[in-house]
Amino acid sequence: MRYIYLMVILFLVVVAVGCTNQSRITGEIVKNIEDIEIKGSDTLLQLVSNLAEAYTEVKPTARISVTGGGSGGGIAALINDEIDIAVASRSIKEKELKQAEERGIKPWEFIIARDMLSVIVNEDNPILKLTIEQVSRIYKGEITNWKEVGGKDQKITLYGRQSTSGTYVFFMEEIVKGDYSAKMRNMEGNQAILDAVKQDQTGVGYVGIGYIVDEKGNQVSGIKIIKIAKDEGSIYVSPLEESTHSEYPASRPLFQYLSKKLTKDSAIYNFLMFELSNEGQKIVKKSGFVPIIAEDREHNNELFD
Amino acid sequence: MNCLTKFRMIITSNHRNIKEKFIELFFSATGIIALLILIGIFAFLFITGIQTFTEISLTEFLLGNEWNPAAYGEPKWGILSLVIGTLIVTFGSLVIAIPLGIASAVYLSEIARPKIREIIKPAIEMIAGIPSVVLGLIGILFLSPLVALIFGLSSGLNAFTSSIIVGIMVLPTIISISEDVLTSLPNEFREASLALGATKWQMIRMTLLPAALSGIVAAIMLGIGRAIGETMAILMVAGNSIAMPVSFFDPVRPMTANIAIEIKEVVKGSLHYEALFAIGLVLFVMTFVVNLISDVIIEKQVRGYKW
Image (cartoon, rainbow over all chains, first blue to last red; front, side, top):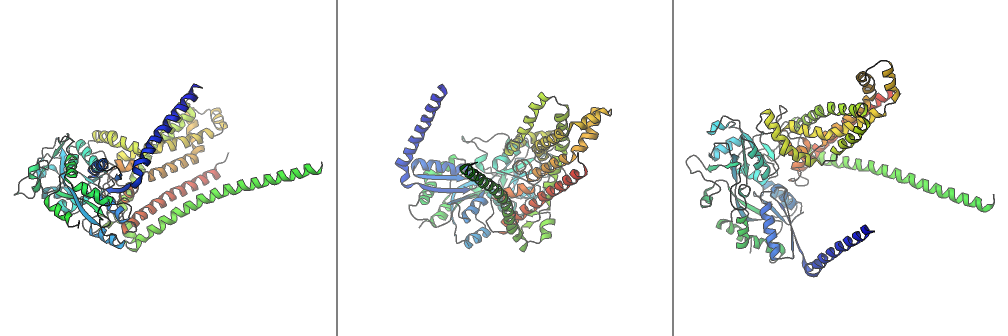
């Protein structure tokens, strides 16, 4: 009998809690909920989630869902007309533009932040710096031993992302400038690369800057961040140093794509304005990325008219 | 018997007939639906997958050993290294699971005391209930560093680690079916062997295992089907390199993992999308052949050996 009482009380509590939530939703928010579906880059997942969260605090009627799956996945979903905004850590490919056109979609491109793509090795690796050409030859499989670039006599183990990843494509097209070595291990995300390199003395990997610094701006332990130079004559730059960000060779813009032209004061327009505002860019910085530069703003402004 | 009871009897028997008919209809309908679903899946796979070959030749697809649809230069569409990845992991997992599985089944049915069996058998069947993503996590965080340490490798994300993980997943299938088959053998077999002066080991080896062979083969075949189709755990521990594997300690990219990775980025109706379905078709054919072989073996065994 006691149990039955307990069950009844429990049931009532559950119902009561359910009701209050319900009434809050129906009472205030139901009037015009604005749904925004965002999907894409894993590198940017945390950043966009943070932006969405901050935005819903300002504007509680917005209901934003953010999912990962890689830049390629986001753009494919945009072309398949499943989402509102695709997040990408690379620009849209020629082939994808054509596919979008066939479906009557003309993607609009905005730059919302910048990333310093960082090359990392295990902390026991004595290597401190590499040129772009060396990184490229390592990832093409032409340099296979660390001693060829001044390290220990150890075979190099390559870690990279899957082909769905924008980081994969950007690194291939801008740094490697050729096909990756077929021996590269294809990992599921930035974190997986980070973990693998932490465990592997011979490993080398590439990750977004958001993954190598924690919330307080300290570098994560177990890895070493390589300084990179454009060529042998130029200076070697660390992605961590803010003053030399403009000279870092693997700096890349991070994009959001829309499937249609913006109409003023639509839900998506307002969210985008928030992302590009000072407040939004503060969150970008807090999430470990780099705010957009003047050139990026110009690029964006052409699309607002 | 008056008229009323007679009438009542007709009614009830009619009623019963209708009920019977209805139940019959219901069961045949569910059977047909299962068949239709199977045919539908196959047709979908076939129709989508077959379109690949308007642009890629069948020989290039099956015998090319480079798969790289997102290449810097020309995309490559050969699935040989993926097929070999699947075969290596399947083979490795069976090398682990078959001896272990049969030995455990023999132990459980012939040697273990009933009390111990009651504890161990459900425990083994619980392994089948572990989600494969959990086994994959264990593989990444615990097993692969261990494998790297023991064999002096730079990374433990390779075919060997995947084989262990898949072997563990296949084990419960092999153990529990083999054990059921062994237990179902008539007791006369044991009594007759022992009466002829056989030791327990001789009885198991020369009488029980041959008699149970068809069932054990069926168990192994089911295990192979599971191993070929396993995706999530493999995706996490196989390393997924596209290079042709030459040893057990090379990273591999089995067909299932490849589909799971790339289906996220493809645009519906593109060549890449169709090619992934073509890989699915190859997988389907492989498991179909495995099932066919097991059916033939079981049929033969049953006909040749009846008790």
